[in-house]
Image (cartoon, rainbow, N blue to C red; front, side, top):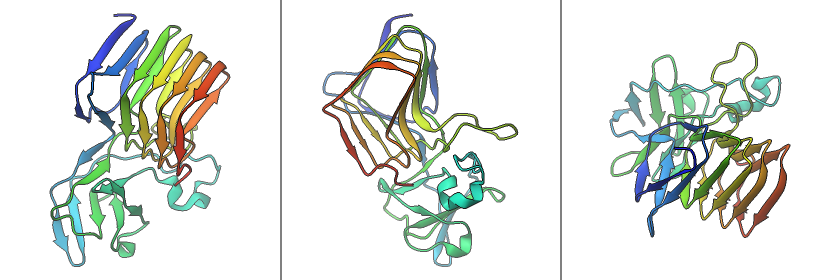
Amino acid sequence: ADGGTIVMNAGIYRQGHVGSSRSLTIQAAPHAEVWLKGSRVVDSWVQDGANWVSSGWAPEFCNTCTVNPDSSKEGMAAYPAQVFIDEEPMTQVASQAEVSSGKFYIDTVAKKIVIGSNPTGKTIEASDSPRGLTVATSGSFNLLGINFAQYSPQQAFAKSGQPYNVGPSQIYIDSVSSSLIENSVIVQSANGGIAFGSSNNVTIKNTNFYDNGGGALAINQSSNIVITDNKFERGNAA
C-alpha cells in the first residue's frame, strides 16, 4: 500500500531488481543485518589446466554503455561484470589467455566464467543483476539499515541501439518529495552507488559507501539535501 513499510529479517537476499512507484519505507528488523546482493553464488567448477571454468553463465551486461563515446578507450572499465572470491573482487581481463591468479574472464559466446584462483573451499559470487532498486514516486521513500552490494550497473544510460538501459547506479531514486537513507552500506557496485534525480528534502546519514567502481553518490536537479556522518572510501575504483 502507498506509505507502507517493509521490514526485512536478517539474511542475504538475491532477488535482482526491485521497483516501486509508491511511498515506501524499507527497513531492517531490530538488530538484523540485511544484505541485498546483485550476485549469485557459483559453486560448479571444473579445472582446466591452471584455471577453473563454470559453464552455463548467461547474464550479460552492456559493454559499450560508457561516458566516453568511444567505449574501446575505457578498456576493461567499460565491462560491468564482477566476480568475487570470499567477497574480495577479482580483476576482469579481456581474454582467457590473460587469466591468472586473482583474475577472471567472461566468455559470453561459450557462456562460461573462467577464473585463475582455486575455488575449493571458497565462496565465489558473480554479479548477475545491473541494478538493485528503482523508486519513482512523488511521495516519500526511506531506506533504513538495508545494505546493497555487488550489482553491476553500466557507466552511462544506453544510447540508441544499445541494450540494458538501467543507468549507472545500484539504486536510483527519482522525483521523491522526501527521503531518508540511514544506517546502510552501499558497496561493490561496478559503477555508482545511489543516484537521486529531481528530488527534494533528502537526508543521507550514517551510511557507508566504499569500493564502488564509479561515484558513490550522485544527486541531480534536487534541493534541500543533507549529507551527514557518512563514510566514503575507495570510490571510482573501476
